Length: 396
Image (tube, rainbow, N blue to C red; front, side, top):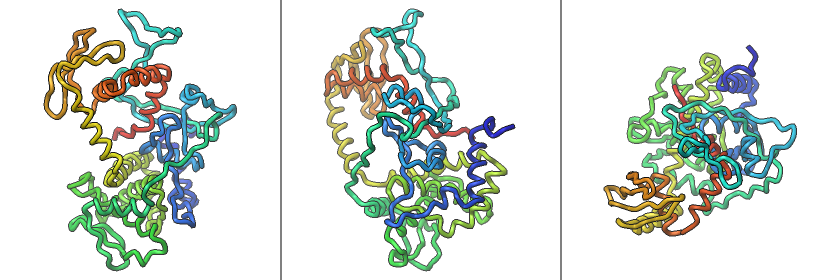
């Protein structure tokens, strides 16, 4: 059977094995002289959301300078159509929803412009979806990407993460490792590294290992002395380090872990699915570490949201999405029981639900939510874009 017809995890694993053997994998990508990252996190060109897990790994392996990607349909809706002759990159993800034409009284609903009105329907079981993505360089009319300015330097951000982690660093000896029993990181002092960025990249790699602790992700202890398990742990930790490198703009250096290149090849040859499982695990590990970073903007947003939520009160009637919602009763933990006045349906909304946020937004910015809903209807592929970039759960 040709590689074209192999499942995607097998295709990517085969390619990774060949790259590992040739010393040309992403793990051996040379460090930049200025101490910044060799990687840029792949993002959806429309939503600006980062791709996750195995999808992020697949896109990073394409080694493209432009980090933006769109499917063919998304590019069309975005008015940045794919150039003739461009080649896409295949990804897969698990979707919990599907887009279908809305119906009313058993009849399909169309909008004023004659186009079908689309709606998202939740599936009983997630389904695997394939999609071809095209890089930003293969899209027309795409504006130049301007990097988001950061208030703190990469090393300052890394230090903030370490400070808030609760893991103690022990500057001793030359052997770098994380010790689970004492929940400590052991590594040389900062002066022993050629660049400060290398010190922080190393410290964050060990912090990735610390996510195995029962007070964090309580992951399986892959780090047992058995070589195969240790290789699997390091495969996950190094993919996570690449993701963190791309996010914080710190360098990634394989260093002493180059001894794992051969074992990684052997593992992937024995079980091609291992690479995608490792990438999805690595994403969870990277998300946990990056989530330790104190974010002033986040705190301000939470405070503002709490202030806005206080305006929701019993008896309010809020017009939204061609109906009116009446707030019936305030419940525990900021939840509300509301009624759809057009159907009489009573539902519970919490601060994490989309309807809750939409009603808050409509209450404080009348008309804005309607514009957002209209945009979503005009771009049904946007929902798919959000799912493909944020979904990385994989069936084991």
